[in-house]
Image (cartoon, rainbow, N blue to C red; front, side):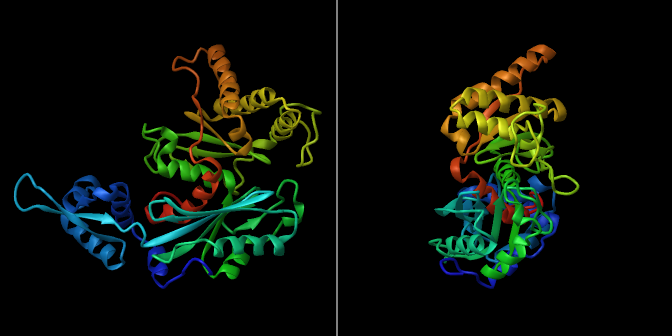
Length: 378
């Protein structure tokens, strides 16, 4: 891979780890540059000091953990502090939109260390798109300080996440049945994980704890349900239920944009009429952004009523162009619903998702990183 370096160490990083090792690794990741002692790891995991010592010794052998100095103890000798070697490995996050690609290189903490963006024609055919995406990945600067674990690729659905095979992507039926994961992996020579753009973004938000704004919505924390609504060139949803990304029995959950809310309405790219996506994008095209926000709010209210989620996050380039309008419009519909129902706790809050234009790409990198820390299936 041109600008990024795939080394033998990557195989060790991707090797399956037991639950306890992943738990320790995640605590080391979250402790940041200050690090954490073995005793603290034992206290916070419930593992014995002996078990923690064995696990951390193995992680040090793999180059994932190093000593970060000593910390004064309340009794006895000072404690050795350990920290994660954040550049011991990197993951590439690739976001393929209908007209643009974004690619990021992230260290083990998920921090972006390099980024590229380029025009893309998703309708140009598989060979053209794969080659264009591969060139962007290979052109990433940096990454030579650690091995590249692989590529997480996020793009419009529907698709089969487990097999990495595209289904009838809205507006691009020619992609149906294309084995994107395997073809891209052969081209780049590294492991590839594929998921919908909305699922990838939701995973990134959940893993980073951003969805809760510091109120405990971290992925794997055993709680917290939110919807990430992505309005760009299309409309979809990423759902996190009780701390986990909900993909559905056939990995098809989140086709939010194609719920019909107006019988006989405008024709949608999916072939149906009156879909939220068609109504939202149509209003935007007419310059009626307030109307688009209201329509999006109706769909969000349906989700809140169906799933009883705690939070709605908005993202995508169309939202980014008028964030206040969309937050106000969606929030207004949810507020009116709460008042009608007499919900004591008030309306479900609505916020713009952090991450901006590269939020999906960062989430795509987490398709590889999150499983290393026991924080969800990649």
